[in-house]
Image 1 (cartoon, rainbow, N blue to C red):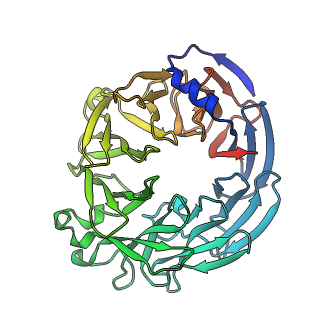
Image 2: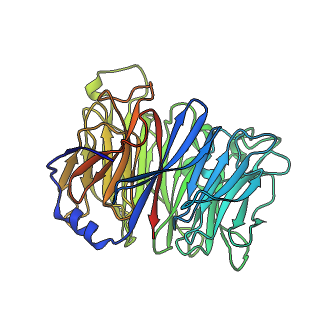
Length: 443
């Protein structure tokens, strides 16, 4: 790595304390593309070591196992069936391949939902087109046995699988198929459900949420609605989820809900952004003690362009989880709004990149629920930033020649050490089409 600058940051002592408490050595995985060749690099912020691990000759998606042992690589365009390859992340050795993994036919389902690793890294859930190709089914792959198990088998659409923190249960969203697809249903039949199924004991799936029964939703046009981003609370008592997850066109409806897992019912709507503004970004996170939910979002008015200084607005809302009420709210960057943001793993620090402004880390982990520190960096973040698990390092892609993110692909990889204030550009990775895959623990 090439050290380009060390800046004096306005950082609370909690950043340093957090870094000192963590003894995990984390590595960074970065993808770089030149022409039709894609390269996977490993980067160690601790010793400035950069290693080229794997090379491909197509377009791929990547999922890192939580323990850092494996990386699942999906070839989106392999024919006749998509191919997933499992690699040893430390050596780059190919371990296994699977065919017919993932789905590319339903545009509303994010590609990143195709694979979800279990917390212990010994298995992953994945989407696969149903037998009639009118929907998707959930399957599970076991790393040790190299076997696959079908979890659901029907012509419905399953999406957004989410493991419970202990790996014993899997939650997912489900939409019924009407005549030929899930997207041609009459309004009265167009709704989503949330199920939870046990993995080890193979118990029947439990219906947690039936959105058809929620009468307040009947006035929302079905084409704006789709459930995604299911997130378990650390204590496994609740599931947070979003409704209004459209990937195409302007998203002018979004609601955030929480539902109890122990028994059916108890659905609570936390945020309803159905005022037909365009939702630009939206990120939510549990705190580690499950006592608070932090939500950051940015919107812009839907309609003719207006003055830039009033075009975008952003805010953070903090909810307590005893009664799910708002205990504080912060307005952010009222003149710009936020394009890219990410919460730290503990849900207490937010990395943001305001439009036409420097990247910033906002610390809201103090007991008074106020923004006590804002750390600014001399870069603009292009695409979502990535925290390491300790909260010490923040990695992001920055435009190497300009302060804004252009489309020419001249992107560099930057890593910030929040405990020291050191900002380093990874010079061993060529400037160009670079993207961050994620962090992993190195033992």
